[in-house]
Image 1 (cartoon, one colour):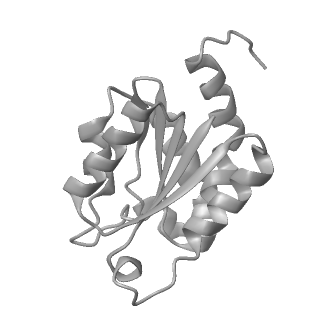
Image 2 (cartoon, one colour; image 1 turned 180 degrees about the vertical axis):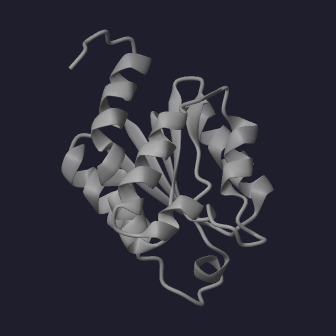
Length: 159
């Protein structure tokens, strides 16, 4: 299984901040999927660059692409828009589950505009950009994603 974590941040891309959220999600993935190939990418908040990167990952046969950041209300937060341009089908329950779980601890989780969906057989999920939000968001949906990836790859097991 090939998984890519894409951090979307102008400040990290420019070297003004250190990306902590993307590496933290990648570390969780390495624990949960020890046999998977886990890659990381750092992009600016550029919608076109993200569309290109996600399209390329799908073309290369990636199973899962997790974006970290760009889901807020800021003027350059365009990750959901880029994701919608790439996906064939949405999986709205994943984003809803992350927002609901996050809001149990932080009411501002409801402001996240993240989406999730499929591009062919690759699942794309937008995680929040903060370290805590990204980790908690991933942990809120990891079991769902694992089952979803099984179904997408032709499995027919049900928990």
